[in-house]
Image 1 (cartoon, protein in one colour):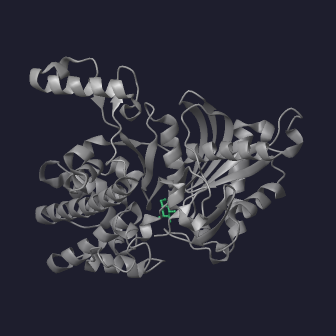
Image 2 (tube, rainbow, N blue to C red):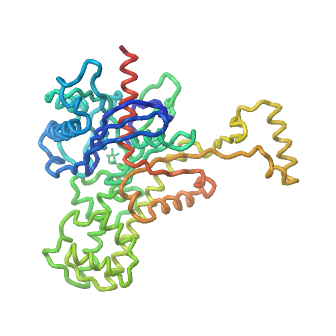
Image 3 (cartoon, protein in one colour):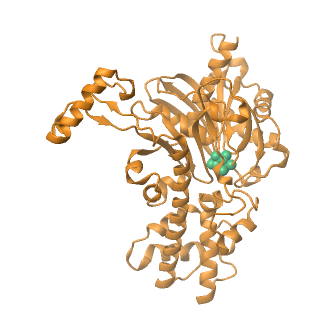
Length: 466
Ligand code: GLC
């Protein structure tokens, strides 16, 4: 896997403040937001959302994509922050607004605000973008229109999700992993700098690493490969890559189902050549979620949807078959998602070193003095025999491993998180005890908030450098 250093070397603890812009270019939508960080783990957000037109995803030039984005950015500023819509409007007391750009693709990063695209994934393909400095192209389009905004940071959506979760997450635990299970799938986690050997680290500390796990096992040495997976891959615009993603994420699961239904139905009944079912991407992941959740009598809802969308007059058996397929495809995806999460949790070593905290004093046990440790050992010994420990005021709890997630599948596919959890339990090195320590929380639209947080980090670095 790529394991890309993000240059983010600290995690927010909820105390950051200020107004920042964020532009979030995902696989399907563009979001422009302004985030006002309140410094008490809360924030307020204004946003504009637009679907990305298919022709923009395959535009001729990278600038064309940014021209589309800057038009939306300008419209957003006019509505919500008119004083920043044009350079002439900015009063002397106000400087330029800092913007964090969430770019949900694989890019090689060399600083918080510098990175170049390695490859397109999902539905995008703009060949002239490869290798260009992303922030410079974006900034050039902003400057052309005299908008007083500086692109201060470039962030992968998983990094943004991790930071947003860390800013808002309950308690003092810092988040280990940010993961997306949406149009694409990927995860970013906290690694010790000394382990990131490609950076020749000369100091201690941490850095967030973007794994790009969607491209795990492109050689298919361990991943399952059905005839439907093969068909999905061959027809995709990026055949041979993102093989893990093609078995997990929302962009492809409907396609797997479509190919499976086509092979199933053609032997039992007719599908008209005009049926939309013959078109690539005719089934999206919301259909898959609906089919998996179907429990109406005689499958009436699913049969209506099959007839309404695809002109298929499904009998009971066919409808049941479609449900079974949707369940199998979703379950396989969630189990593979669980494997990715487990890999990061195990690699982090956090399971092996449970930090026990004295709830009464908040002191970590590892830092207790000799006499306190001796006293506690004595109480443990006595307590074991008398049950006294259970009534004792000194309770211990083990460290939580916090994970932030976002994306349409984890949000809407029925039981996606439950299946991830059962997978974690099934993995020996984690088991029931380990799984209980893993807290998974939705960081809704976290990538935008995360981008604002990195823009703030970059702003502080800039100030220091001046
Ligand atoms: C794709 C991209 C990756 C992104 C993920 C989720 O896998 O390559 O960068 O994080 O989709 O949006």
